[in-house]
Length: 80
Length: 149
Image 1 (cartoon, rainbow over the protein chains, first blue to last red):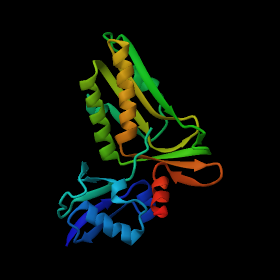
Image 2: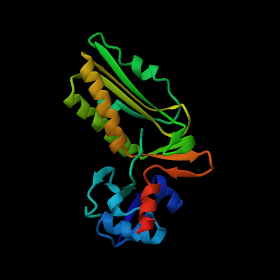
Image 3: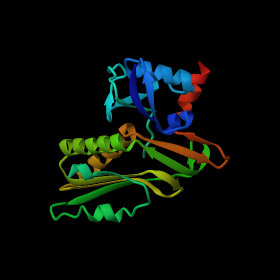
Image 4: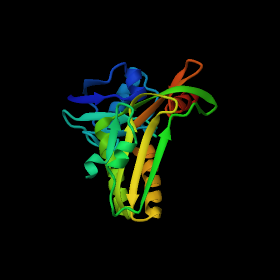
């Protein structure tokens, strides 16, 4: 088990009903963790539709997760 | 310099402010782009927009785009300001300004920056429609796509 800090933005924040949380997980990578979250909170997007940032930087969905990492899933962006 | 070149603004701003900070006697041209809140999108009447950013990464990625523009084009200075929060129709959502010795690099760089910002910077847009509905642009379609399968 490790503790991961999550921040949620936009559609994921609304679906989760909060903007951040700490979560205990056995997930080894962001893709696996997203599977847990999607099942728990009925997130609408798939990992193919998302990017992920680990500790403030874009990362691969299979990046190994470590204790205390901060993870942000990034829905399709729409600035401008 | 580039650390300050991309900014998120939580309130309306006057584009003359970033533009006036770029005055330079070596500049032969200044090109700018303003993105405005439009009253319609994909056939629906839009009454207002909300922009939400992941600030740490938005600033980092925005400044990375500006660093790229400096490498790709012969420019003197550039600024990009993107709004967050609730905006009404007609407000400035994003502003890009570029100074260069010559116009071509100013034009091309301005276009490069706005195109890359729209494609890469973690900022999301929620549209509020005249019919009372609202939706996250590019995300609600994803959701519909998921539901269909």
